[in-house]
Image (cartoon, rainbow, N blue to C red):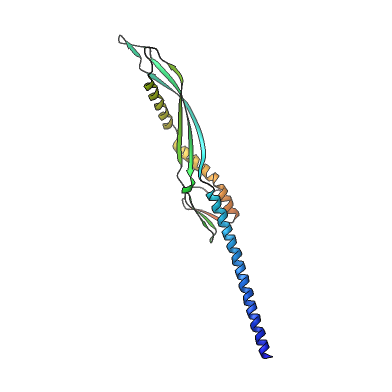
Length: 202
């Protein structure tokens, strides 16, 4: 009788041990699946972004060019003048392959380690709006090309690149809100180690 009780106790102990191990394994498997799912969701959202054009702005202006008058007998006559209509499209983009974001699934943190610098490109275009010259004091093609190139450079100089960069950065953060909203929904804390962006209150 004593032997039977001992055997039963031993069997029950083994069964309880197996049950506890299976329960522990099941919990950790489920926890691991949740962590992997979180990691996949966040990293997939990040990798979907490549090169992002965050904003475009158009500029335009009229520029007047007056050339030296034709000289006859020491007198300046027949001056020539050109009015140019100059336009430009400024484009601010970010190469998000250079963005470094770490998904810390253990501490449930989305860590922003590095953000790319803004890439600003300006595409100017010049058209002759009005040209006043004379047969004996004509603009040469070389003159016209030089004046148009100068107009493009003047347009580029007059663009406020600092303001464009600031507005582009603001728009970048607005566009990254998809990642931030998803992180918050998964109860992740967002940590900006670059100290360059103001995270939105979500």
